[in-house]
Image (cartoon, helix red, strand yellow):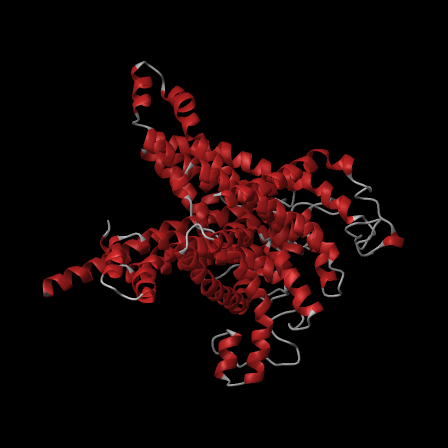
Amino acid sequence: MRRENLLTVVAASLFALFVLLALFGPWLVPYDPLSTSAGASLSPPDAAHWFGTDALGRDILSRVIVATRLDFGIAVAAVAVSFVIGATLGCLAGFHGGWHDRIISRLADTIMAFPLFVLAMGVVAAMGNTVANIVIATALINLPFYIRVARAEVNVRREAGYVEAARLSGASDARILVTHLFPNILPPMMVQISLNMGWAILNAAGLSFIGLGVRPPAAEWGIMVADGAQLIVSGEWWVAFFPGLALMLAVFSFNLLGDGLRDLIDPRRRT
Amino acid sequence: MNAQRLLAARAGVAFVLRRLAAALPNLLGVVIVTFLLTRALPGDPAAYFAGPAASREAIEEVRHALGLDRGLATQFGLYLRDLAQGDLGNSISTGRPVATELVERLPASLELTLVALVLATLIAVPLGVLAATRPGSMVDHLCRVIATAGVSLPTFFTGLLLAYVFYFLLGWAPPPTGRLDPAFSPPQAVTGFYLIDALLDADAELLAAVAGQIALPAITLALFVIAPISRMTRASMLGVLSSDFVRTARAVGLSRARVLYVYALRNALLPVVTTLGMVFSFLLGSSILVEKVFAWPGVGSYALEALVASDYAPVQGFVLVLAALYVLLNLVIDLAYGVVDPRARFEA
């Protein structure tokens, strides 16, 4: 038990560090993340550049720090969109049943019928290569999970005593959904959010790694790893390594936190 | 006896039909979504498909040929007709039919994905069993951390790390460029899977070269899906180990190994089979990234090359083929589950 707590504490500290970097990163960096310097290109990590410099002589530490905001921003925006739309649709499906339920569940099934990353790639390719479309695509592939959780949680509660009581005292369906059911399905939805967040970052970074979404010279972890990919075989490991490490640690801390949160809220689902 | 057998056979047929019927709406949904994606192209789809050098008349001609000047329902009908004929359009960059090019490259992707799946299963199932037999122990926690770390790894990053360590530093692996060293000529195509074809050719040197080339990308992919498989194995193994029949097996004095592997594991693997659907979704998605890192000549890198060139027909064909493949895989998993667990056949 203590070991698990330790893990959760480590994850929480890492998470706090990333949030600080996302909020204050641009003021903390030692160099301008966009300023190039031909003389200092591809220098390995040293005292002046802790993480080394890339092919254009940009300081990698500064770029990794500044990128935190963009990567987190995309993930948070995507998960927020999924949460709002997914919770609304899921609540409607779970509460009303019938044709609402059939249409909404079919929508979720159709999305899930795709390998999700492939669908995201197809959506961005079709709608245009912008950061906004990365957010939409990532939100779309997360949507079924929120719909399903909200639907199942509302469904088991719609005949609950407090719902009947509210109905008898004259509350409308909308009122019951918003003020009685929604607060009660929030805990499992929060667990879903924390479990999804890491995956959302991973997807967004994966999309920019294959050249979708974020455009150079903007600092973003996926694109920075892509920049360093060709240099790996000639031994310049640091260009791809540090942004990749930051991405991995961010996702790792989200996943551990999500697990910890789930154990707290719903111990039975622990696997 | 005969009546019983007849009943079981009938339930089996009904099960297969029901599963087939359940897969159809998914397939239809996939086709509708990919159709909508072809309409959502940035700018004018006709201009895209006509190519950058096309004249105004040529664009109008393409618009007419694609049916873009007609109603949406008619367009969908035309799209279905083309699909039924196996026509996914032509690639602008190569000028060849997309369907042909996808079929040529599909074996490379499938081989990589399947090798990764086998590898991941071989590691994940014992790991899950080990964790379940000692819940709360060091091994259990270690398993949990490894599993969480595995699913946190960006596949493109792990791939690069492995390439750096095993190719650049240690020199154990061949350069991360493709399916086969150019010094070799590919084995005679029977299955399209180089590993099997090299085995059929009985060419040990070629087999070693092929295996060396596939090792790193397959390990990269496998690392990513170890987590879901091992966690599911652990959870379902925990459930089975506390069940009555395991207690009985222990009480009558069966050996520990026999209880664990013959009685418990076989039952515990049933729910694991159903998670394979999600695992395939992960595998097919991240194989695109891994193919890019290792210059693997599969359908993923084909779609990416096309994407960079703003050549959309291959991308759409790729999305459709992978989605169709995924629906079929899920169908196969469902049917396999019915074979493994007869109870599933009787459930409504």
